[in-house]
Length: 306
Image (tube, one colour):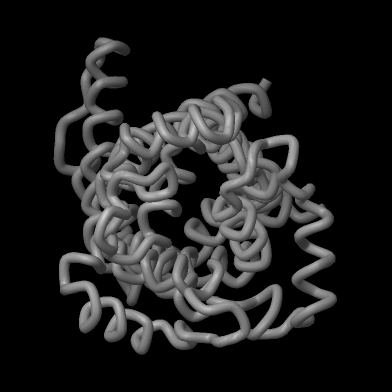
């Protein structure tokens, strides 16, 4: 085997292993906040008296309290199986394709620039979105179900139901694909662009604890910025993939059309519904992923060199 090909496969294996590990750890820790974010994004503005009901949530902690009381404590992990099944390959693909896109977007430079990191992140996000959208569709359907845990259909049952009723296409298992591409593309463009650009500017520490804090801090800011900028796409995605207000009538069809409807009927601020749990998840979650990736990659690199 040629040495160049052998080195490429070695690096690809490390990127897949480190990326998969990062995704698995992040989703296991942060999933409840993703569920809360989806519930907040799915609900429209309250009618008179609705704010006092058990099915309307007045914020992150109110949502957690009402879900635990009416649906059971473990309801906070509704819909976790699809992301668990997909996060390992999803993050593996994201980090692997990011490294490959970096080579494409060097534009003649001998080393990556902030533009390189941003465009490579955009490409990785789009690739990731295309692969994971069916899992997102199933996850949102499960997260929107407000029954007690024992009454919630299984992941496979929901998947079969979606396919049976609407097929695999853009009205079925791949509903909301454009919104997912917008959400993931924008997030990863900012996430990778900011993290790698700033990491190259802020000096490294020899002390391992200080270096860990440096990476966590940069990762936290990267995840927070990406969440703030991309959340209108996330709201549109939840509305398109979630249950429609009137059964049998599709109100939310297209990404930008859904944004316009939400802003017109509920106010511009409604496009930022779920921002608090999203930031609470992807701020530290983004830090967790990047730090786990860096450390697992370094471990695998040392292992393969032995």
